[in-house]
Amino acid sequence: MRNYFCSLFLAAALAPAIAFASSREPDVPPGVDPGGVAVAIIDSGVNYTLEVVASRLARNGKGEILGYDFHDNDRLPFDLVPGQRPDSGRHHGTRVACIFLREAPKARLVPYRYRAHSFSTFARIVETIAESPARIVIMALGGYRKKDWAYFNVAAKANPNLLFVISAGNDGRNIDENPVYPSGYRLANALVVASTDNFGRLPPASNWGTKTVDVSTPGEGIETVDHKGSKIFVSGSSFAVPRIAALAARFQAANPDWKAQDIKKAILALAGPSPGDSTPRTGYGWIANPALSGPRAE
Image (tube, rainbow, N blue to C red):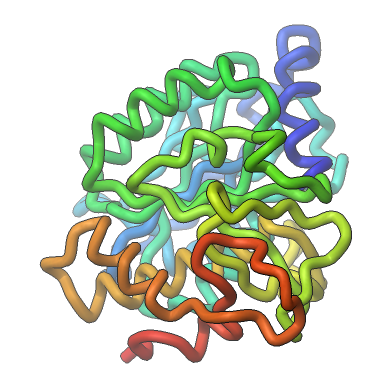
């Protein structure tokens, strides 16, 4: 996520000068709502032309998707990092979304594409999500300047019914002492997630912090689908986040009356000491395999 943190700020600087018209964005394939728990993702968009994504998009009765593109102000939240060339290869949102969809096979996705040069837009996105069926939000992104995320912080606090699953980042530092945001706000309705290998060891790039990071889970060498529909392997806290979000979605499906705090409490209860690290690096510990933890997808 280190490069992705940077991309938010670089995109903010470049977006006014480099604009790619929404005509580059394909139409959303026709479809119907697949049903299941709705989960929002705030990212660079998703490649909704891929069957694995298109079949799982939350839709209204007219077949229109429930997500939105806040960069182009349309209903085509296609996976392009604002301000970057379409062939830049970053396509972060699709990679994150496909991990989530694999581990929450009965959930539906509500994608939101952020507007890079306006951090106040994150508040609008949160308010829009609050009016949608989604109660879980995937946020595998962040930045270094606290003031940039102030609008998001206010909106998130105003919507305690939403559970934000946020990445800890990949800077190899203690974010209790050197925060990144929005994880650094330590929101009551957020789960901050760090990445480990399959043995519970934090890689050198992974951020940690017993006061800021709630749990860690394997996010290194994780299989997903890229923007072109090809199988790839990815690493970083960005890819640990959708695994915990999928676990949250399964808890919500099994317990429809649960609030955000109920889901968070259940997930934290699954965490335990990491066999690969004798020094505590997170507040609650390690979840070895979220896909095999908690309720199963029926």
